[in-house]
Length: 134
Length: 134
DNA sequence: CTAAATGCAAACGGTTTGCAATGCT
DNA sequence: AGCATTGCAAACCGTTTGCATTTAG
Image (cartoon, rainbow over all chains, first blue to last red; front, side, top):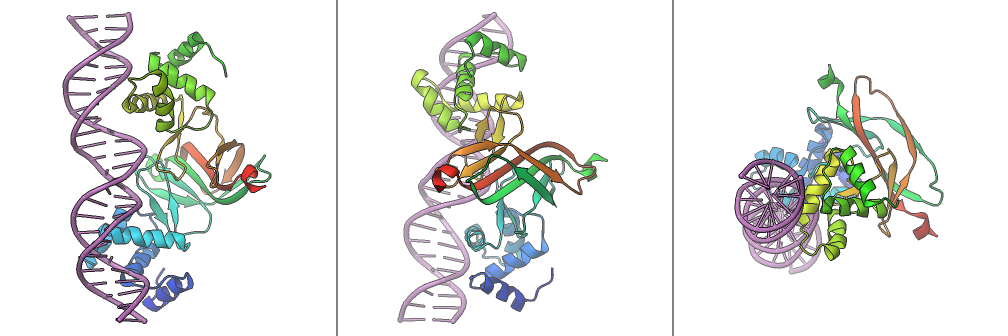
């Protein structure tokens, strides 16, 4: 993913978010690092190029991004929240050995849910990935 | 579910857990309250009948129960961990209005996972339940 | 000039830890 | 006596909050 600054600013404005320096840098990081990063991952990386950066600003940014539908939160039985910029529905697999988180397509069918309105869903698997398993 | 103390003691021993007063009371609570309680839920209820009870003991008990396969942990985008004594696989639906958590059967099929070993999985839905929606 | 964005420091809250006290065999 | 269980208090740590400072239109 290699968007220009202009394209990223338009992307944010389309989501009803005013572009700012931090927001653009976070967006760029998310687009270039599809690793489902934590707030600390993002902070540690960006604080190099923005020395005055605070964790609070990353928290603020992720809260806004989530409210505006730019990211989804992942809760993968960890204490930290992870963020996924791919908001198309997909499942996640977390390798318990190397910690890597994989995306994969999944389809499910559920019964006995008449009258229930589903707003969101999360499908997570835990185990050993193909790379660690060979 | 109405097991005698003897039956619950056998149940624990079969899971390689030495029965103790607290462990039996927690087990009984879990069997009679299929509401996916938090540590605080369990603590608040049991501290009535065990005035000297501490949260630490509930944490200790749940850690042991989880290690021995008596319960599964649920992480439902909340800050607290919930516990489910039904360890047969099933999905969960959390109502965002009333907070109730429903169990339901679900089957899924996933692709592109050759070589991946799955140890556990969690399938969670969020929305409005039938009761709140009518 | 005004409102939004950023940043600092403290508070919050669920969980973990170290160790002492208690209970059980 | 010796080991497991329980409990207290403090630490831990990701996140939130209040408020002051800076930035931008």
